[in-house]
Image 1 (cartoon, rainbow, N blue to C red):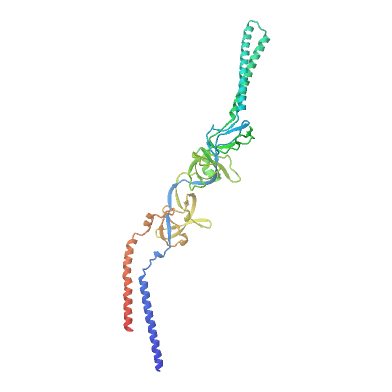
Image 2 (image 1 turned 90 degrees about the vertical axis):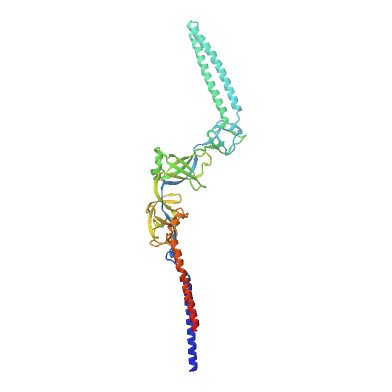
Length: 432
């Protein structure tokens, strides 16, 4: 019996010790929980970047790819045969119209000119003699001192000499032209290619001969591209009616469009196999940067300036065949909104329907929210840059005064559990 009572007392002491440890742990938990500040419900909401829809006046543009073409392109060929004695340009140099490019040995042609000039002089002498002889025959005929047959002979000799003079003068002119062809000049102003045939080589005349070099005009320059049928009907056909259609051009290493021009010409028929029509735009190129053959990004402006709503491309979602955005109201509630897309304006997209001026949409963090949910709003600009004004407007006006009040109310709450825990500890120590 003594052993049984002893074991019961040990069990009771062990149970009391467990209760004391549990009580201390409970008070410790209470103290730790009380020391941590309470979290508000808004802090648990997902935070997303929200921007206001942009409303501004725009001109719609259609974008195409094309190639640069020279207005004038000439393959320089010799017009007389001979030996090249001089090349008067550097490869790739800019030349002006009339500058000498090549010189063919002019001596044979100078001799031909001299010979033709001598023939002209002889013909002039013959003409003078026959003309005076005919005039003398006219006076004799009036006095019946010459036979009619002799008079006709002298008249014929005068006319024949005059014709021979004209032939000699024509031969002299042809010889002078050939002599001029020995000096090959630039037919247009522009940039010359390399010399395909150098000094000492003999060249032959004619269209079938090898070109000496090529020459392309520099400014202005053409940009050719193929426009689709819809764009032609809406915008480009105005060029055929005398209207000015603006065109912008950008090169492959440029982000934007650095040059501005106009539609120069439109082809006379549509290509039925591709449904496009060939269009040629004209651009100034005074600095010579644009070179024929370069790839060009071209955009054609057809609409008149008008007001439009624009949003960032990143804010647009795809739902099967639909496009949508997530709209956030003033209370932070998210709504699904289907939209219709228009043309692209830089990194922004025109919205033709589905949004209104002043509405706010989610531009970053759409994967963290669902339609019908609630979010914490972080205002940014539509281009993605933070706006201090928008952030200040997004914060509630009562928030700065609410934080000190919450902190003041939290301090007594932190001290009270500590006193209770100390009193409970002293009380347990006295009881023990």
